[in-house]
Amino acid sequence: MSPRRSDSRDRMILSAAVLLREYGASATSIDRVLAHSGAPRGSVYHHFPGGRSQLIDEAVALAGDFIAGLIDAALRAEDPVAAVDAFFALWRDQLAESGFRAGCPIVAVAAETNDDAPQLARSAAAVFARWQEALADLFVRHGVTEQRSRRLGAFIIAAVEGAVIMCRAEQSTAPLEAAAAEIHDLLTHALRERPDAGPQP
Image (cartoon, rainbow, N blue to C red):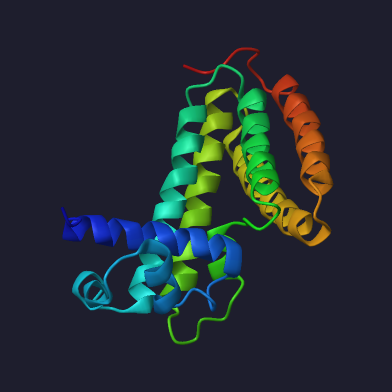
């Protein structure tokens, strides 16, 4: 039985996200996505009338939703420090399991100029903002002031993304582990300084 059209579409978006992680935006071509996904060539402009730019944009959204889901799950955690530790551990495991080939697809898009598709940079910025906001909400829920929570959210995303890039260059998880240890200590200190000793309702 042949796959449904929606299956082809989903496979192409997922393949694009995987390829972005490993090869970057400019190297994630329609041909490479078709080869990776096994989708029929005729499905490209049926599912993505905007062409490659639309496909990359939807792959960015998919990757953004995946990480946001992990952060949203952490919102229910009783220990925000442990939740952030787990976030770093997830990245460490993905780097190691991929032989340091898998980076962040959002960074892959944000780091390239994309003059022919400026909406991609806007989409990447929106994903980063969503992640930062989710982390800030986590810290506010546990009694940290809103202003500091926002700063911490931005800092954690910047630290993770920068460390992942360094890890890929160095072929080592050491930069990520160093960032994780420093942020663990920073969050522990921030939570001790909060006005209320317990989490806010």
